[in-house]
Amino acid sequence: MKLYSIETGNFKLDGGAMFGVVPKTLWSRTNPADNNNMIDIAATSLLIEDGDKLILIDTGLGNKQSEKFFKYYYRWGNHSLDKSLKQHGFHQDDITDVFMTHLHFDHCGGSVQWNKDRTGYQPAFKNAKFWTNQEHWDWATNPNDREKASFLKENLLPMQESGQLFFLERQNQREFYKELNFEVLFVDGHTDKQMIPVIKYKDKTLVFAADLLPTAGHVPLPFVMGYDTRPLLTLKEKKAFLNEAADKNYYLFLEHDAHNEIINLKHTEKGVRHNQTFNFNELFN
Image (tube, rainbow, N blue to C red; front, side):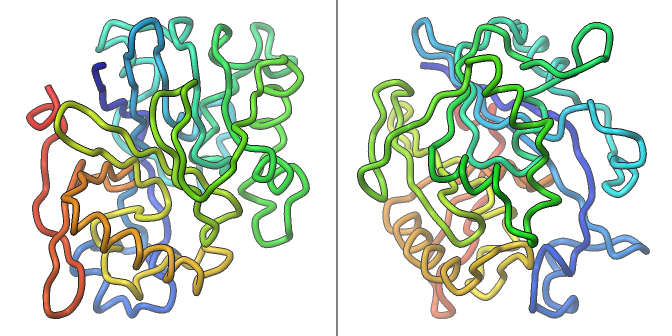
C-alpha cells in the first residue's frame, strides 16, 4: 500500500459559520479571517494505491459549477484534482474506486464533470466504482431545507445513472470493508451517516477526518461548525473520537485545513488538544 495527498483546490468559508457559537476572538487565534470574515479552507483528498486498487477519498469542489457559484467561495491557489493526480503519475481513468465521506458539494463535486459538448454531466472517473451508503444517499437525494444547497443533483444523479454507484452495507458504527481494505467510522452529527476512513498504514493509524474535524482549530470540544445538523450529537461523537485518537496516537488527515496537513493529539488538563503537526510526505513516504 502507498498513500498520496491530492490537493484538489483551496477556497474560503465564513469563519463564523465554520465555528458556530464560538466567538471570533477565540477561533481567529488558529484560523485568522480576512476583511470579509473568510478563512482559508483546503479540499485535500487522499489517494490509496493498494495492489490493483487505486482508491480516491473525496474529490473536492470540481470545476463544473458556474462562476456565480464559485464567486461565493473565493477560490485561491493553483491546485486541481487532475494536476495533483498527474504529479503523482496517475490519470483520472486509473482510479478504480471513489470513496465519498459524504455528498456535500465540497466533498464530491469533482466526482462528476461536463460531457464533451457540455450538454450534460458524466462521472469524472469512468472506470471507478463510487462508494457511499444507502442511508446517506437517501438523505442527500431528498434533502432537508437546511442542507439543500449543499446536496446538488448534478453531483449525485450522474453517478447513479451511469451504473457506477455502489452502497456499503453498514452493520455497526465502525467496521472493516474488504472492498476498500480499511475501516469506516459512521458519524451523524454533521450530516446523516458521514463515513470516516480509518487506515492502517505501516505501523500507524491514519484517520481521514473529513467534517468530523475540519481543521486543527476545531479540536476543542465546543468548536463545532454552524453547518452541523445535530451539533449536540457532534459533541458526543467528537469527544469519543478525540479521546480514542489521543489514547492510540492516531494521525489525523485534515481535509479542510490549508495549513496543517496531519496532526496528532494529546491529553491536557483542559481536555484533548492539538499536539504536533506533520508534513504528509515526511511522515508517510
